[in-house]
Amino acid sequence: MQVLVRENNVEQALRALKKKMQREGLFREMKAHTAYEKPSEKRAREKADAIRRFRKLARKKAQREGLLPAPKRKVVARAR
Image (cartoon, rainbow, N blue to C red; front, side, top):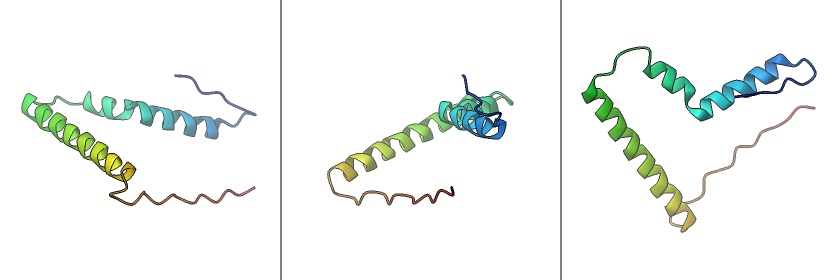
């Protein structure tokens, strides 16, 4: 993983790195490796993840078909 530092702005580069790591799921993976997970707990977690993914997919499909309203866009005000 690589992040470019522009104009010695290390804080901005660090934020970008953390965002990339979050998207890749590295934080979740590191947390999972800190302690032993029982096989029954692993099955329960994987089942819950699958249900979450399925519900998200169904929600997006319903939004595309017009059955649900589209999510509201977040308005970000940029200071210049």
